[in-house]
Amino acid sequence: MSFIKEILSKPLFKATSLNAISILIKIFVGFITSKFIAVFVGPSGMALVGNLRNFLTTTEAFATLGFENGVVKYVAEHKLDDNQLKKTLSTIFITVLFTCLLISLGLFFFSEYLNTSIFGNQYQYAFVFKSLAVALPFYIGNLFLIATINGFGAYKKVIYINIFGSLIGLIASVLLIWKLNTEGALLSIILTPSVLFLVSFFSINKEIKILKAIDLKFYNLSFLKNLSSYSLMALVSAVFGPMVFLAIRKYIIVNLGIEQAGFWEAMSRMSSYYFMFITSIISIYFLPKLAVAKSNQETKTLFWNYYKGILPVFIIGMIVIYFLRDFIIYFLFTKEFLPVSKLFFWQLIGDTFKAASFILGYQFYAKKLTKAFVISELFSLFVLYFSSIYLISQFSIEGVVMAHAFTYSIYFITLSIYFRKSLFA
Image (cartoon, rainbow, N blue to C red; front, side, top):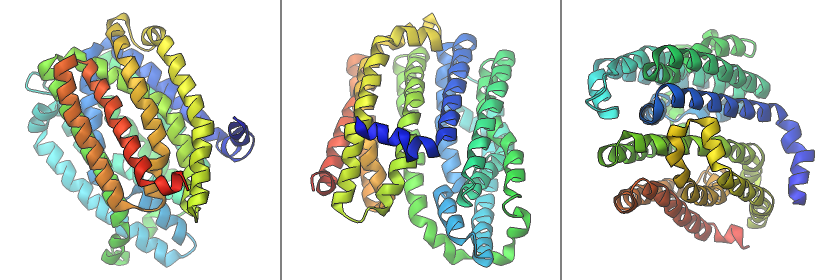
């Protein structure tokens, strides 16, 4: 465990203590909103919120064209070159704005169809998609501005915006859910990031006069080629992943009922809370080191530092969560969600394999292994979907978490074989 002490005492927690606070606030906000959803809309509302979140992830990916990581990279590279910076910002912003407006028109005019596809015939939430159509340019504009601020290295500003966004999101979610129940829960997902556009806009103007930096005369179509690999990796994850989860949730709703789908969504939300710590540690501490590692031996050292230092702590956390599962359900939700208790075992097994896979999966980004990433991602989603359908038919709702465990065990084995030279050099 000496590696954990090193992280705590040196770069990770000293450099990212503010980020740690941001993560804790996000988790706290998630807890409160989950409780309100559980109390005011129940398992069925939880399932509908899950469907909208998956749809929004896909919509966001198409609207941004997966450019977010590319924005950070190229703004960081060209922030001292005014001409290149203007080309970068103008090309990306104009392209994303055009795409975003097209998607907004589609959301508005096909709102009834989307309501039926995402929520089903028995629900009338077409207004949610019309609201999203209006809010989307601001929603995506906020993401673009935050990525630009990040590219300038204004790390603290990004974290402050995230903290502010979490607190605004909490207030908006609580009020909307309290007053409008399910409709409020759905609207709260859309509106908060849109409101943050103004905060991000005023923040970035201290780094660069953004309106003066974006001009059609600086538009450079050839520059988009540099972003293609980032787009492909981001779009594959953000498009196909939610599509698979939507398909599985719809299968559960049709065959087991919407309440069972709500129980799975509740389990998934809990999983996302504790995974924030893993993703933060890897992206902030390990990813930059993996990106500059010049040999298999250097990469091996990073991999095994993670497996010897971080993963054992995570596994201990999983064991604690398992034995406290009933208390956690009561705390986060209501007694109506007690059936979620039977989902914990296989979910936690799968999450352990997922955590073990994460450090290997980030190597795809670190070394820009686009083709390998796409193949592995599509393979894992293929396994997840078909194993879920089969195991749900055999074991009811427990089958979906069994499929989760099976998929990530296969994924971990596959990545271990692919990166064997770095793991066992």
